[in-house]
Length: 306
Length: 306
Image (cartoon, rainbow over all chains, first blue to last red):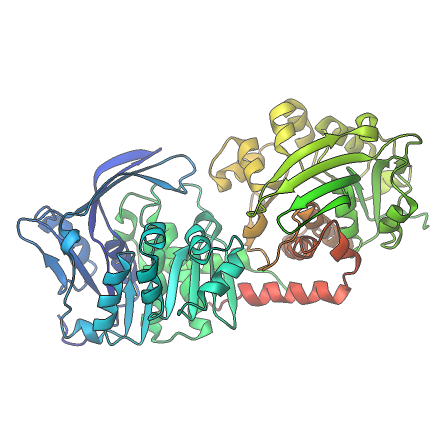
């Protein structure tokens, strides 16, 4: 393993999910935001993962990181502990998961102290975890660009901490409905503009099957989603989007408008593959040329002449 | 008035609406699908309107057609009759109207016999009316390209007639949720593909604040919506979209892929202006250069480099 810091670091959950969709179910589905993120980002750059696992995360499970050369120096194993578990199901509309069970397990006491190397990563993603924890990780990393995700649970239950964390990041990647809830604005454009006054200079709104939109104080970019006839399991779509987005930025080493727009498309491409199968099964056998192919299709199906 | 047929003809409702939104209310708001459509289309081409009005549609009201040079040769006035009335209200999300009252009035017996001139219009739009009536109008017009709209009311209550009408049109313009309902498919892409087996060779799905998508058997095009901070009254958004779409096609006299894509953008531009004020107030004072300006903004905010 290289002694140089990874261009990209992610902190978040690694989970063993139990998932039911109208098309099938899986009892033991590797998941968690940091896992989906890092697998996706690994197609673009070297990524280090900050997370925690228990004894039930097997050597076979670890291959998901190793085969993608994801740096697990800061993946802590708690002997005698059990990995974070989430059980959920989707109806036919596939837009919202119903949580059936959550067991924090080793995640309950997760409060990472990062390696010296990890602290030098220039791009950092704070996946959806408790906002105070996000901030403590953010403070450890001497990053050039920091993005975060969050969810309704924290918007409703830890708003003050969330606002503090928001004030020390560069970008927020967030769902449509959660952006509206955070801002207290029904209109999406006003909601995003309001969030831009809370700290981030970049807001990326994930709209599921409707695509994504990206706001700065000066610019706006939006794209429809890739037209998928078969969405099998939406779990991890947002995290694989974030992985493609941050992976693209970290690979380019730039956050100019041109690169951010491409990053939104790469995020959309990775999310579109991720939802085609359970867990990150599809990404694990994805070929780099398949990413390029779908990227060019985005160009084709959004193009029109002036 | 020219003796040549209008390039574009629309059949549908002209209404006097009563509308309540979170931002205000209006007791007497000119509306109806054919009115919104024709005002929008009039920026692109000469359009004739096939509809019916009562005594309460005043000379002042008629100015909405005259000032836009909309051909009212087939706008029938029923002496002693009352114009179609619709009352509805919107909540803060503005996505769905709650109908408070509907009075068909002169519309109840509407069964138009078109003038010889109208029968020669090459582009025809069958706005959302009873599907049997749409078909009877369609059969009178020797059009080169026929598009239609519909709604859940007919999908649920007049399905067989609707399927018959669908089988004799070239294009369906339809809302997201209604496309899913018509096809019996939760997945939008599969829903559109299924509708393409029912007759139309072109399906345009209107997604409100999320934009629009356009399907043929060979191609796919999608665009986000114009980012509006202030949506005042969504009434007529879909009809003004259709007016811009069909107006663009009729003006070009072409339905090639290149023109259809531009038509989807022009439809989106017209809808974005229409929702900024009650009725078609905003369109009535719209300048042609404002259309061009927003069209170019669509290009700018959807553009990315390969």
